[in-house]
Amino acid sequence: MIQGSLRKVVIPAAGLGTRFLPATKAQPKEMLPIYDKPAIQYVVEEAVASGVEDVIVITGRNKQAIENHFDRSLELEAFLRQHGQKANLAEVRRISDLANLIYTRQKEPLGLGHAVLCARTLVGDEPFAVQLADDLIDAEVPAVRQLWDTAVRYGGSVIAVMEVPASQVSSYGIVAGDWVSNRVMRIREMVEKPSPSRAPSRLGIVGRYVLSPRVFSILERTRRGAKGEIQLTDALTRLAAEEPVFAYRFQGTRYDVGNKVGYVEACLAYGLKDREAGPKIRSLLRRMC
Ligand code: G1P
Image 1 (cartoon, helix red, strand yellow):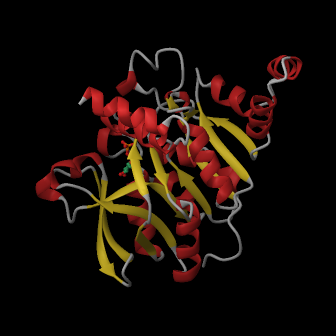
Image 2 (cartoon, rainbow, N blue to C red):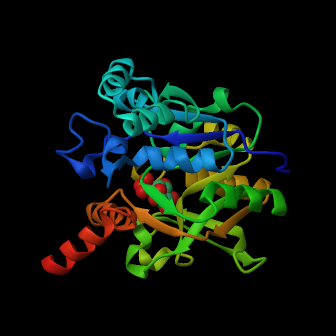
């Protein structure tokens, strides 16, 4: 049973970002700018717009820049004040007041399931959301809000999904089950990164989840799966055998900023939305192509 309001979200951000080397050699991939903001700021803003109070970030070594970004920056603020840069000052202050940020470390790269388990004591015994910073979702109603409303309405955990090309199923967790409405499916089966011949459908998991706290005790017992890591998808398969778990086809545009082409696409899409720079970027693109 999921009811009331969503209070906590977990953002796993301990990965090494090897797909973006050398850019990520000394800085977290979550801090790479998508047009003019670090990727993780979009994700935290989505959580806040969804009504979340506590944002729990799972970090690791070399991730201090994330904490610095959401902290006060007194020296910078003093400089901006002295130089009359009011808009910049207001923006810098807004970021440090966004939410109650809580950090804990994943000491070893043991996978997404293990990263979520690191938040167990901070989440406690209440339903919570998980957001992956590799997936940005531009939507009128923030994606986490859509998932929470679905979880309350259908009374179970909810995972965001979208249709993916057959050639890409091996990059996703894939779900199958029975549709209970236009956008909602009761999940029967889930497999992490199957080969195209083993995929039960083309519905791929996108990095937004609303989960019942029961998943923690399941994660504790989950063995290493695909890539030798403790997979969240494997724990969710077990959860679906004990409690209702739904897939939800969210509304909005998703950008996969975890690969280089998706990263460039997101930078352009957010740049084109900028009122001042958008038209210039558009004509730049016309000239280049
Ligand atoms: C993770 C999940 C996978 C999901 C994907 C969405 O994989 O394990 O089920 O489909 O995120 O982005 P990753 O891309 O972190 O390997």
